[in-house]
Image 1 (cartoon, rainbow, N blue to C red):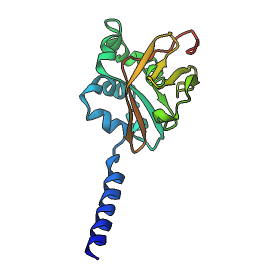
Image 2: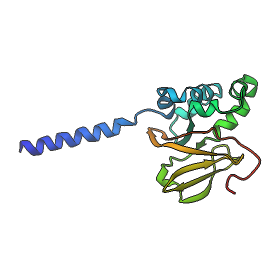
Image 3: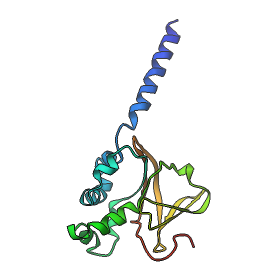
Image 4: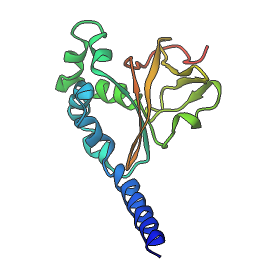
Length: 171
C-alpha cells in the first residue's frame, strides 16, 4: 500500500512540475536569457511587449545577439529610432507566426509559411539535418535551438535576423 501511495505522489508531483515548467510568456523567457538582449530591446522599442506577452499562440523565430551584430553597422541603432518604428515592427513581425509550431510541425522539404507580417513569406526547410528559414532576401537562418516552450507559444532560436525583401522566399 505504501509503495502505490509513493508512486501516486510521485506521479502527481511530476504532473505539477510539467504544468508549471512553461509558466512564462515568450517575452519573459527572452528577457531572462542574455542571448536575446538585443531582441528584447527591439521588441520593447517596437511596442510589441504586451502583444507577445499575450495569450498567443505564437511561434517566434528569435535571433540571438550575434545575429543582430552581423547586420550592417548602424542598422540596429537606426531601427531602434522612434521615427523608424514602423520598419522595426515590420522586421519583428516577420519573425512571428500566429500558431504554435514545434519543429516537428514543419513539413519536410522547403515550404512557404506566412508570418504575422502578412506582406511577406518565409521558406522553412525541414530535414533530418535540421531546420533552416530563408527570408525574402534569399538569406537563410539556421534554427540552432528548437522548441523552447512558453505558456503562449514556442521559441526557435535562429542565427540570423530575417529581413523582408523583394524576392520569393522559396526558390
